Image (cartoon, rainbow over all chains, first blue to last red; front, side, top):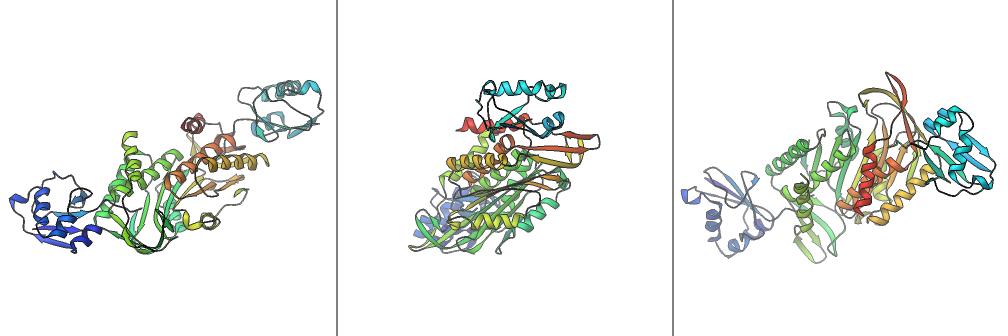
Length: 83
Length: 83
Length: 154
Length: 154
C-alpha cells in the first residue's frame, strides 16, 4: 500500500486529503504514480502538473526520479511559504 | 583652552583623567599637542606613542592631521573593546 | 528544541531556555534571535488574517535536518525553533529562531541560515484572507535566492 | 533608542518597545536581536569579573552616528541599542541591539552592521579580572575585519 497525501492548493484542488493506492511494480517511479492520479479527473490533472509541484517521499522532499517502495508515504504540495 | 581627556590604559598610564592646556597657534595640529604632553615624563611618553593610540576631537574619532581650534575637547585612548 | 504549535510564544521564556539549556551557558557570548510576524500588507493587499497549514511529521523532520546542518557548519549551541500554525492576525508572531554561539558571526550566520532554509525546506503554507478574497501565498523567488547563497558560501 | 546604563536590561521589555514604538508596527515582519554576554573564558583565561569604562557623551554620539548610517543603508525602523558599563560578571548581559524591518535580510544585515561598528567605533573599554590578575582587553583584529567588510559591501 502507498499512502498519498496532499497539502495546501494541491489538496484544495483535488478536494481530498489523502488516498491509499495498492503498490504495484509499475508504480516504482514517482512519475508513474503522478500519471495514475492524473487520470482521476480534470481537477487532479490540473493540481498535479509537475510545474510548481513538490513531492516528499517518507517526509523528505525528493526528486522526480526517486524510486518508490511498498509502504512509502508520498506527499504532493506546492512550494512552501512558511516563516 | 583645550580640554585633554584620557581613557582606559592611557588614563591609567598617565595616572590622570584630564588636563586643561592653554591654546596657542603652535598647538593647531594634533601631533603638536601629543608632543607637548609627551614632555611631561616617561609615563606620558610611553602612554602617548602613536602606535595603538586613538584620538577623538570633540567626541569624534579623528585622524592625526586634524586641525585643532581653541575650545576643542581632545581625548586620547587605546583601540575600543566594547560590545 | 523544535516546536510546532497553535499558541503564541513568549520570547522572554525562550531566551531564558536558550541561555540555560546549554551545557556551558557562560561559554556563549552571542545570542541572535529572529522573530517573523504577520504583516498587515503583502504585495499591495491589506491582510485581514492568515491561516498556516503544515505537514505534521515532515515539518519536525525537515527542521531537525536544517538544525543538524547548521550545527555541523557553525560552532553553535542547541538552537530553538518555534513555528506557529492555524489562524493568525496581523502583528501576530509566526516564527522564532534563537541561536547561541561563542562568537557573534557564527550566531548571526547560523540564525539567518536557519530561517532561510526553513523558508524553502519546511512544509508550511500560508493562506491570506484579504479584502479581495482568500488566496494561497505564492512562494518568493527571493527566498530561493537567499537559501542558494548558503550553498555557494560553503 | 540608545541607552548607556549600569543596570541590567530586560529583553522582553525591549522587544515590546522595539515593536510598539514604530510608526507602523504591523509593517515590520522581521525582528532581529543581538545580545552580547560576558563569557567565563577569554583567550584561555578564566574571567572572574569585568569592568566596562566608556567616554560619556562620545559614546552616545558615536552610536547615534552608526544608527544613522544603518538607517540610510537599510529600510529599518528605529533600532534599540543598550550598552552596560561598570562591573559585570560572567553570564551578565553587556549589549542589546534590536532591529525591525519589513524584510528579514535588511534586519539581519543592519543588526550585524550595528554591532560590528559598535565594536570598533564606540568608546568602550573592557578590563578583565582573571586568576592571573587584572588586564585591559586587547582590541581584536577580527573586529576590524568584520567592520571593514561593510565598507566593501557598499
